[in-house]
Image (cartoon, rainbow, N blue to C red; front, side, top):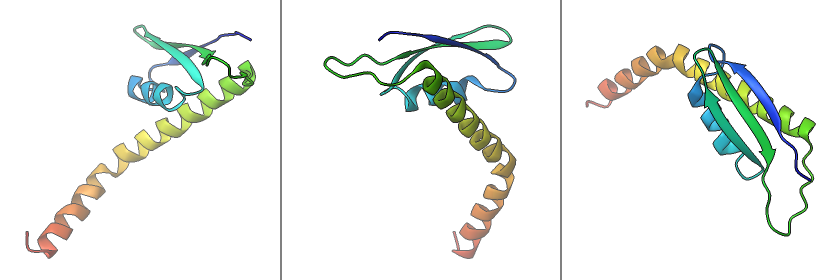
Length: 100
C-alpha cells in the first residue's frame, strides 16, 4: 500500500541538520524528501518499499515517528548548544590535571 504524508516545519524550531538526522535515522522504514524555503522545511514522507516485504506502517504511525524523532534531535541539539561551554571547561580542567 502506497501513501504519503506532507509535514511543513518552521525552520526556526527545527534546523535542517535535525531534519536530515531524522531522515537518516528513519531511512530503513520511511522515504523522506526534504525541501527548504526561507522560513519552512517541507517533508514528504512515504513508506520504504522493499521487494517481497509487507509494509505495515501506517501514515499515522509514520507521522508520529517523524515528530518524535524531530523533537528528540531538536532537544539534543539544544542541550549540546547550552552545555558546550561547560564541556570545554571540563575538558580543559581534565587536560591540565593530566599535565597536558
